Amino acid sequence: MKNKNLVFISAAILVVILAIGGFFLISSRGEKTATEAAEEQVEAQIKEIKPEEIGLTLELLSNKKAVKMDITKLDGIKSLEYEGSYDAVAKDEESGEELTLPRGVGPSVIDIKSGESEITRTIDLGTCSRNVCKYDNVTSDIKFLIKVNYSNGEVGQVEQDIQY
Image (cartoon, rainbow, N blue to C red; front, side):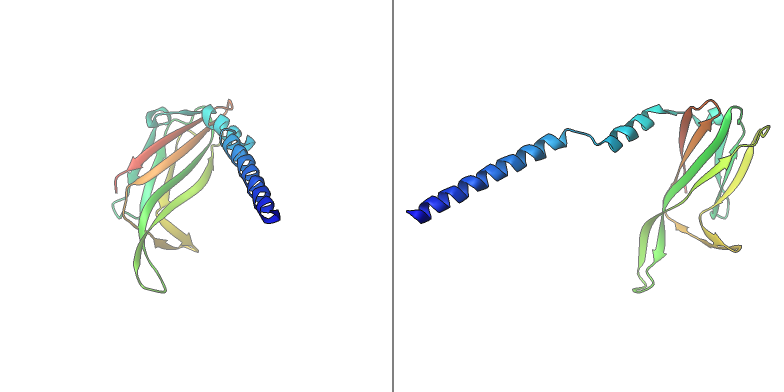
């Protein structure tokens, strides 16, 4: 009789624990953390802009090792932040196998000087150190995201793809 009561009590305790755990699991799924809510608020404040609004042109150089970025409408812009992403083939040093991996450039910040009306940058598709560059073997289109920080505090962003 004692064993039956012990089994019954153990089973009842287990059911109660599972019910409480399930309740907390279900109720926590609907709540956002403070960080998630803050990130959504920041994203809502970033306005989408068109490349023409800042005079943006992106051009893959003929050697396919770099992208030329021109921005010709800098009035009211305090700074720009850009990054590019793409896939590239890399050789695994241990196995010698070729792998397709996500790669990218940036993020990089460009501070706009007073009176500056346009900028041009050549963005290498790879890594450079001491004037020696190792270029990526790009296998996909290149996606650029450019964040525009305006002097009045507003923030905009432009997304543009370059066919590789």
